[in-house]
Length: 179
Image (cartoon, rainbow, N blue to C red):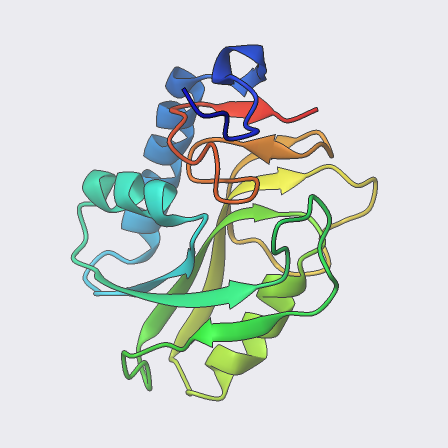
């Protein structure tokens, strides 16, 4: 067998269980259902990390939604952001006059959301909100508004539930600490 350099998943410490993730998604879906009753918001998933969270969220929603994606990059293969955000794949949906919810996996430095808010505002949505599954504790309030938050986690590098390190570990069903 060829080694990939990837640590076995069993050696990664579980930080958030599958059940806790399910409960957080259900709570977020209920809040979005309440806020968008009678409307059809556009959920904009931030690739690649949010795809599993977004899929779980969409399945729990009662309100009709449209889904689109943007892909941005700031990490590459590092465990720290480069500090530079670049748009890799732009939004395809016309969101003018529509209610838009950015769906993000984790907010730590908030560089991605700070980049996406003006990017989306230029498209003149009726409303623009942020939904994040995880917010890393940094000791200061998040530098962006987070309208829907799944949970706060320690400021450690995490993988699983769509989050990766060098494209590894996304498939893990829970959230784990990469040490």
